Image 1 (cartoon, rainbow over the protein chains, first blue to last red):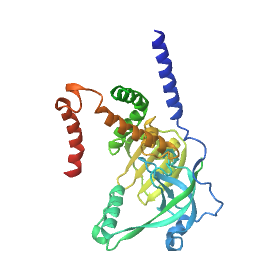
Image 2 (tube, rainbow over the protein chains, first blue to last red):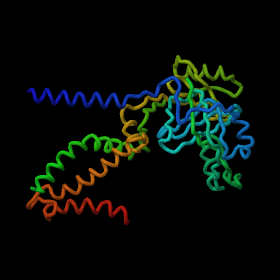
Image 3 (spheres, chains in turn red, green):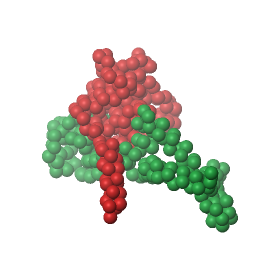
Image 4 (cartoon, one colour):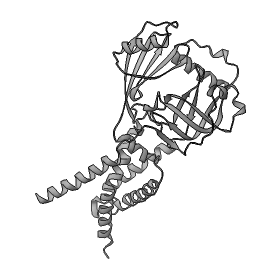
Length: 162
Length: 182
């Protein structure tokens, strides 16, 4: 029996260590990702999307409400624009930053580089068809005659405020 | 030196050392294999409700209607018009209500983080970076040792090098080869 008790103690210590090391601390008030934010004044998302060429491949700071998060890997977060129906995606390589789902509805400030994802005509048709389907709207792929660009920010620093 | 006995001892002790590593990679491997079917990070509970709203309704009226539709008594954190017909309401804990005015339907999503598995996945995918890659590499080398040393664990008719059990080794080799070539 002493051996059994000793084994139980070892197993208990291992389980305690495992649970402590895996405890979730992601509900802190402000969530910080990447480097510390600089005090660069933010650019309005609407201004950025109105003339993206002016900001392309440049470091910008944006702020807005988090309105979407990748539920599988936390590898992107959508930031609402100050203009209606607009948003801008923060996209990181898997694992560089992991945005939690409970960030939705909270204000985020992010600094990073704006870049364009160019879609071919066929990709644009599929992309817009998927959006229309999600919105329950009719969509005719023939109305798309050329490709489009989607703009995203690759962040180096993100704060998600409470 | 008795190499046979040394190999068995090393195989046993390295096997003990690798138990937790193996469980980490095996459990997270299962979760990641089925990532399209089961969200490994969150339990997402959905409820749907019919609504009766028009574009003329104010945001405050829409919010009250949506909360009432799902019998919720919670604070609204933020709202967002995704398109002229699609509206999102953000509640505490990352819960959301998505309204589709075209379909006159709303979907409530409540999310609960899963315990343990996200942490295992982060290790499996090397998302924690830092020094984990060192442990991960050591584990990979030890697994190679465990695989090769297993060939020399037993002597005689049940040896991995005999036909009686060697076919298991051949089968285990043939399966990945078939996937590589076919």
